[in-house]
Amino acid sequence: MNHPKPSGEVKAVAVATADDLRETIRRKSKLKGRQADDASLAEVRKLIGNAPHRRDLLIENLHKLNDEYRALHDRHLVALAKEMNLPMAEVYEVATFYHHFEVVRGNDPVADILIRVCDGIACELAGAQNLLAKLPDILGNPNIKVAAAPCVGRCEQAPIAVVHQYPVLFATVDKVSAAVKNNLTTQPMAKDDAIFEPASLAEQGVSPQGEMQAVSPDYVGYQSYRAQGGYALAKEIFEGKKDAESIIKAMENSGLRGLGGAGFPAGRKWRIVKDQVAPKLMAVNIDEGEPGTFKDRTYLERDPHRFLEGLLIAANVVGIDACYIYLRDEYHGCRELLESELAKLKANPPFKLPNIELRRGAGAYICGEESAMIESIEGKRGEPRMRPPYIAQVGLFGRPTLEHNFETLYWVRDIVQRGPEWFSSFGRHDRKGLRSFSVSGRVKKPGVKLAPAGITIQELIDEYCGGMQDGHQFYGYLPGGASGGILPATMNDIPLDFDTLQPYGCFIGSAAVMVFSNHDKARDMALNVMHFFEHESCGQCTPCRVGTGKAAQLMQAKSWDQETLEDLATVMVDASICGLGQAAPNPIRCIHKYFPEEVK
Image (cartoon, rainbow, N blue to C red; front, top):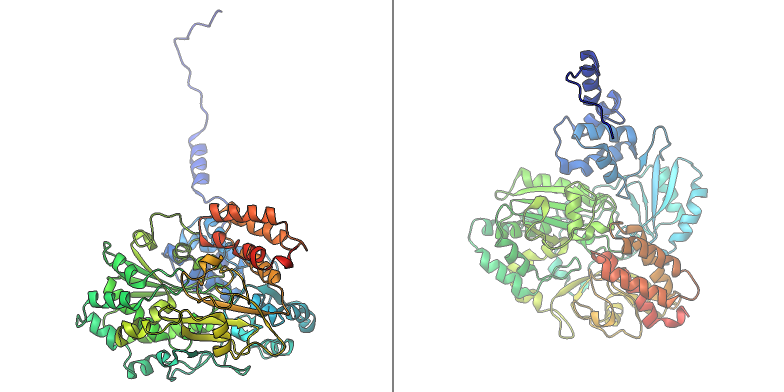
């Protein structure tokens, strides 16, 4: 093959002029995609202030926009991305992850008022579907949107409707219509001069009874709490009058375990994090999204400073530099209360406080999982992290983190002051301690029951709940919320506590006890919670994301395909990375095992 000989001279060829190159550089320097308009930038800056902005406050800033405009307009998201120096894709994926944010495009209409009707088990049993069916026609206003919502944490007041941010207790069509007519869209603040002593309620009911309950009950404010000896113990610990080791031993000897559901011994957790390298952080979980659970709300809206003192005791003992309180978005009244009382505490502190920040959830059950909550506090999608590392070593913002549920911290002051034996002296059937049972469903007196650990469901119903409702016979119960399984009434003598229910395919979790009767079907309870899991799966794991939806579809058949459902259950348990997917099959297996006649 003949090749041309190389030329001795290479001629230069002009590909662009100097002006062409300058224009190319100018075009590349401009942001790609949609640009923020001046009006939207001004509206965003008015709400969130001028830059720079911390990356972890993205969700807080989205809430400010959502509260102001009742939705997230795409033009505001573009402006927010520019102000926070974030990619638009990142802002959009966070905004669309959380159920309480609605992203609208252009001039799409936005409802003046959104009415959420809870369709959790307690509300279903109390007539939620009737409300959902009738409200749109009766209200007759296209600018009012009615939508079903997962459990909103008021199961003892079922059914519940929430008009924007105003909860309608024991909701009826007339009550909801009146709230709309009277423009009741925000929860009122309560009086702050109450007296509330939880230790005196041991082995009693905590929640008031009757349909005339206050939307915002009176609570113990900062001045009242200090006048009653509040923060004296925390101050002694801060000043070194009580040493950290004695406090940790008191926690260990009390037997107090994490009351959010995991049940890890509190004292041991303090010891583990105390030994980590500073700076150390604390993340407090008040997401309380487990269907049937409302104990944290019940204590928080009556006695917030007992919890805050427990938080400060833990912070001083463990060596915490900053505390982040994560509160579920449905608790609007509690949020305003906490904001107010934290401001009073910071304005007149009993001693030097660590940095304390209150963060607002946005409607995602998955954020009750500790690592998903940490992701959300950091302003991200609430997706669980792989373990290890565990958050005690690498947690919030990459630092060692002490994570606690609200109620765990709530009992710290009483345990230390009264002695660990006070807490451990309660109990039945060889169990020790007190448990705050959130009881709902077909009982006469639902509510929070501060009962001995190890009490049985029959004892709980008979001694604390006034028995079953008239005309109803006890048929079955969920001992630990949606994920804790389902048991028949014939198994009414199992002690309710950590580690006692696992042999039966159940667990106590956050002690959310939902009771149903012979007027109900266990399979309907199981289907309700499976729809919940389908709705709340974060989507990170395919077995959970796809499996919950497929299971819900199969569970609607008159006769269940047991083999296929069990295959799905096995895959979800084995391949999901967090407790949602791992626990979702519990109701399926319990129905097959304890209520087989319902699905044949």
